[in-house]
Length: 578
Image (cartoon, rainbow, N blue to C red; front, side):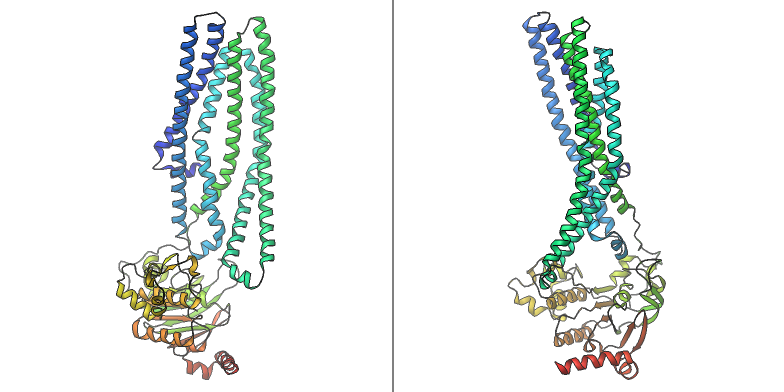
């Protein structure tokens, strides 16, 4: 799994190679030092050699220590550069891949989970790479070379490790057998907590309006408690490793001191050699401990890697079609041919069933119906936010599945049900509609959407800063800015999904008049609840349950459609009572 992600080191390969090289040099230096110290003890002091011998060896140890320090600093620098670069590439690849996801793909993973995978999971892998570039190299090098040095000093004493190392390895294997599942669960609990926080903060105004802070605190506590419990279980598994390792380390040192002391008294081992042997056996056992901790981190990283690869391997269910040599002229014609649609492919009931609808270029078409009958689902099929389950949607005579996605959506301007503004100035938000628009075109679009006057009432005008989510403008102002952004695009098809609900009837009438005067030739499809919003449409489509229950003008439907009459009368009664 981690091997599959190794390609994201591209561009930082030099740092990734230099880091372990520096580690090898540092390790060799550390392994040479005990032998020099043994020479000082046994030959310099034990044999009474001249002070110059001790000084020369001491200076050599100092030089090696300085070189080890330099190699250690460089290994840290290179491993940090390599791991940070790896994290950068991986996050970039994941973000770019998620931009290709359809609405259905995002629904499948959930926004909270994608955020966790892009941040926490990537950090776990990044930390593993940082550790791996040093520890994964250092531990085996130290282990092998220290073992060799132990054998060269005293083969019989080295037999202590034959018992200690396998026991430590067995303990690590037992702990790791549980760790992977626990870390998988831990990451899922992070997803759940992020989802709870995200939902609360997005809907904080509703929470306060309904005085539901207590309920939200309880819900957060539940998710937080579950994350804590999962973390404790996972961390406890890692904590068990330390006493196991220390027990093996201390028992091994006691055995070495006991046996080694006897060898020294028997003359089979020199005092300095015993000192260096203890240093080497410490290196061996510490290397095993490092490997153990690295493997545990690898277990956690593996759980994160699986979640990341799941995103990277996810094939977006909406891809560019094999478009013809020349796309049809952008006229704004839309046709639904026996269209059926359900959100969960192969499961659940149809939201739309056997829809047949033709919309001519330049028509003003309104779609009405009760809550949950599929109005938004219907218009979301036109820019191919979702794909049909059956039948076909055609734009300008070509199945939308045969268009390159970008080319299709360039023909369509859309104001979604949830009006979204981005952090930045009003100017920057409007230019999303057309980045190449002139100042005059932007001003005209604002006027057409009845937004110009309130924009100019701000001291900074078009340079007024919009806070995240547009919280510093009213709902009606936000809707008009979104409409202006869509109109600036001058699309062949303009879709407004209940996008004038927050403006008054007079302003809505002006916006509607602007459509007719300034977007001539543009097909306008509007979803609305108010009869006053749709009565002037060329065609009104009534949706009921999953099908079309009526099509006609206001006058035709008022004369023939019981559903339309009921909607009309209920709104008229409401007006009279008001």
